[in-house]
Image (cartoon, each protein chain N blue to C red):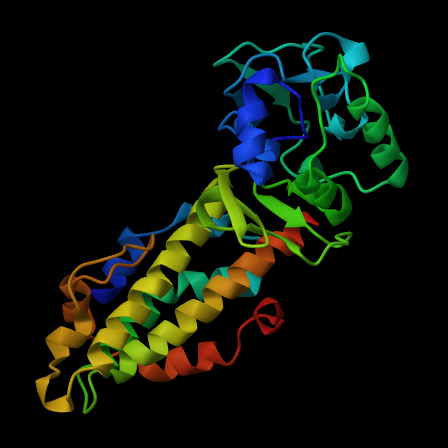
Length: 72
Length: 272
């Protein structure tokens, strides 16, 4: 079920990203969220959310800088 | 977004009330469409057009002789010699290749001193409607360019900026924000898939942070896994925050260890 969900929701925008590492990380973001939600069912339900929030914030900053670097 | 100042009478009022906006008041948006053409949507007649491969913003309307030196913006390729644009019209440039070199589509100012001198001379001409204001000087001294990349995203190059009091920021969803001494204005400048994706990414980050702050305020006994998962919210392309994904999370290959490993191995872009 998990693998089919990943396959059904590709994002063509990500394919436009030239940076291979960034592209791979963003591609994996959906599964990262799933992983975070798994952690949220453990002792501290907030743990996964904390981790995911940190990663997404870092990725947003990374992607913003990437756009600048690509154009200048 | 604008590509230079103008003395168009219809914007004199705007100049007095919103000093910083006058530079971004004439082009509604510039973007590459799906046919790989740069399109400029104008909201005001005459003031913007393409001429001999450059995008110009003419002062006072009229012909070539009325072009202001600051209003020349080089464009990589021009397929048209059209000069004037009527209200509600579009100007179209063809791009040679998908990976065209970045082109400058606008600027915060022109920082050359001789241009400042020219503006002083222009201001003394009673027949010329352009009157520099303190904010004009501010822009003249600030530096910076708006760049349109080969992949259609717009970025801002402030490497030549000289005035630390002027701040310009290119935000998500193509919003260009300029500010000086607390006076700020925002303007949509370009729509593109990558920029939209950035907006979604940042909205998702904000959504997660808001949910986390809300949960942090609760005592642990009141926090359930369902609360941590939150209501269906921001969707970021391939993922959503819906409870459906929570069910998927029960799959054995999902692991927070992967999340940690990615968090510490972000590309160098994020380390600046």
